[in-house]
Length: 278
Image 1: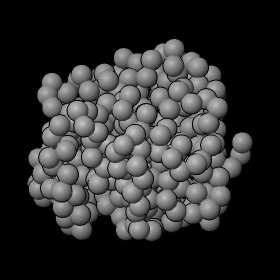
Image 2: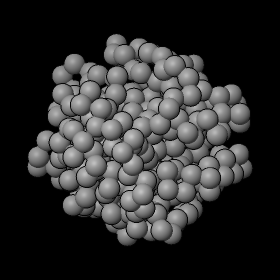
Image 3: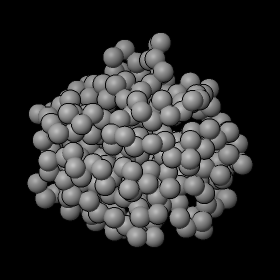
Image 4: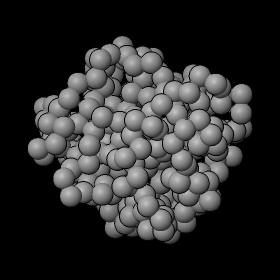
């Protein structure tokens, strides 16, 4: 999932990774942080992370790609996406940008990719922040995530999806619905290939194995909303505490699936403190 569309910080650029184009927002200066969005239809890197990049860009270089099958990044030829594809593309993007060491922040699906990347690239990944994350072994597909992956393009589908993402329904504004509906329409063909039913198999594909989790060397911060219905706390973040060697958990009360939108200032302070403390 991701936040409703927000204004971009800088014009996105296209980087070739493994022969395929990847659209990426690259903003700010300082230590590099790879920002990975979630899996809701209409999600983009800039839509999910532009406001965070604007707030933190004076201290960090924030790299926010559209992952394969989302926004302006097509699926590689013959691919249907999946954890391995997104992990390899994220690693390849940072290699292509010449960034040797970096932190990774991922939301929902992006959290699973962040954890997978930290396991695959221990020499490169310095910190992991997994927000409302997927990836925990044995986590079931929630009814709300199933509904979000099935959301039809258009205003009604956009409104239903956004209403599931946040606890405070005042955040589901006409502007947010219109922006997400437009993004859903633009990406409908590619998204249709990503999570066709039965959808539990795609949730299973985003599981990071217990062995991979145990091998993560970077410190991990888990951030979660207490009222998250999409990736419920008890099924996702809490089990990860048993698998990660260096982990801490921050839970926002009165918060659904999108802490960056629902508690933006505290979320940014938390992120800045963790990324700057190691």
